[in-house]
Image 1 (cartoon, one colour):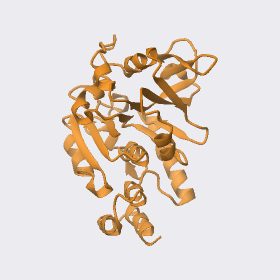
Image 2: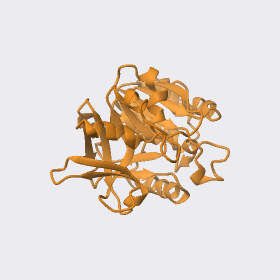
Image 3: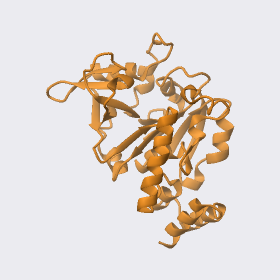
Length: 287
């Protein structure tokens, strides 16, 4: 399975903050936002990842992440010329994916929960499409999954005007190797975008859409507006301060997964030696 991080778009809901820098490069407490979706894919055991960016921002991502070797992964890059919708990511990634299945995550989504990585790796059917839902109090602001009395998906709808369900579709998706083909058939919506809902509907109509309700012990944060971005930073700060453990430390994940060794971790410790991040890596090395 390969991973896709969608980090394009204009970040207009955060203007003027994002007029000169990609939203996914903004800090969420002590790390760039892009670290958090990358950590979710890595915790799920994914090592081949495509990051889709704007043409303007791609060099900044390359400067930050390189080819991913320091994290024991392989990072590739592609450009989304204009924000034409989430489903377009599956078209852009078609050559990268080949015949492999994919886990796709939006670059401004943060997931947190004990054992979340194992849950992601173990709950997938490896056929069809799989989405991850989260109960929200304002379903009119999200894509929503509705179920019948037996818990079977019967509709997926973008920002419904009438409340049918409170199960928000998060920005994390699994697709088998037909996803790019399905995305190629999607017509632009009235707002001019290729909607990911249309791809999910294709799977649902074939009875191949499954889902996982994220547990109450998990957290899903969308950092698309100033309040949400601030809330995410405060959440990460509180968890890290109280536990002494970092969320989305990519080197730590790689080291514990056996993707990098002590020598590689030592190099990262020295590189970040003047920061609290480097001191945390040093604790991992001696611990």
